[in-house]
Image (tube, rainbow, N blue to C red; front, side):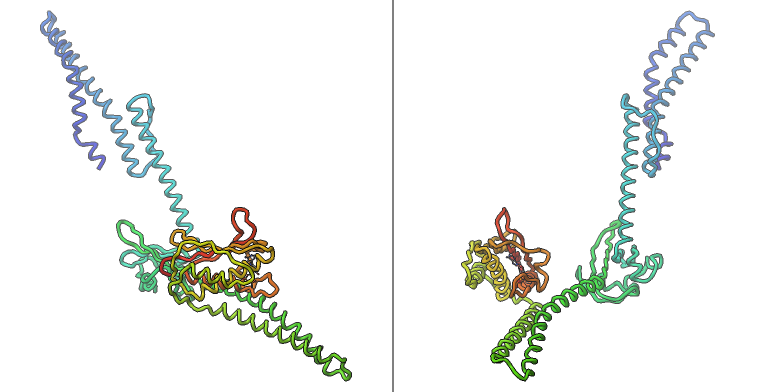
Length: 447
Ligand code: ADP
């Protein structure tokens, strides 16, 4: 196209030629007039006329050429850029004169385009590499649900090479169901490369103006198995510890009581020994029972039954239930939450109980306050206690630093908060205050 344009009779070139001719015309006419009306021989007149006319025409053609050449060079350079060849540079580029400046700008443009293309190539190579290497299956489908792109994870999942997969229909690949429905969601499915639980994420993107679907499948089974295993290990460790704590004294007491019973001559106060031994056994069995009960509570938290809960009533109720010290309430805005009142009571009672335990150690106090931040109710329970032990352990089930603690208060409270779409954290109190702060955040909107 560009070459067609260049070889067409160009108006600009003709105009330059004409302008050159016109600018020389008066001088030529004058020379011709002087020659023909002067007293010269015919030979001189003819020769002079030819020389004058010849230099006039050649000079005008040269001017036309000087203007045309650089324009052709610039056009060729721009055509090369359009074709994607960024290696060609114009000679004579300088900022001193007009033409040099134009060539300089073309060279700079070419350099900019070259580095931009390099960046784009590097970025897409990196993206391709990441997509290839990530441990999830990535598929892109066109508007006719035909596979356009698949990464190595996708090849593994479908058990075939991408050359065979690309172009196939989503239904034929067994992925049609994954393309519809809400995202993200979890499904149980079997593919040629493996069966298990998968997280399905889908989104749309446009290519060449047409809608495409991106589908990402990640294997949850492995992660879940690892999580499950570590939860079991933790549980078995805690259960083992707790059961041993109760069984060891029961076994030793049972042994001493048996030898007491078998002994032919019992000491005078044997009945007292028997009674206190049985009492310890009873006490340990009860504590074991309580422990198992607490565990059952943790494992069987029912889904929240939502109803209106007035924050100020809830906070005052929990504060009043703590009888060992007076809990201060810092009033906040009166708002109504949609929540399970019983569960929220249990949650706040746990937090206040912990704060009071801590405050009693140092003779300090406990304060509950609340405020609303960006549609979220933020309830804080502050204490002047000794501060937090290793924060990494606080929410581990059965972690306790108290002689009669169960270690499930915080885990249960966090479960309740999360079941309401909220969060619960324990942190040191801000701005150099002594003690800890439990911060509960619950969304005000519909749960
Ligand atoms: P429990 O109160 O039965 O020990 P929790 O799960 O409620 O169980 O608490 C776990 C541990 O977290 C407590 O034993 C205590 O060490 C720590 N903890 C909780 N709240 C506070 C607090 N306000 N200040 C200091 N330590 C705390």
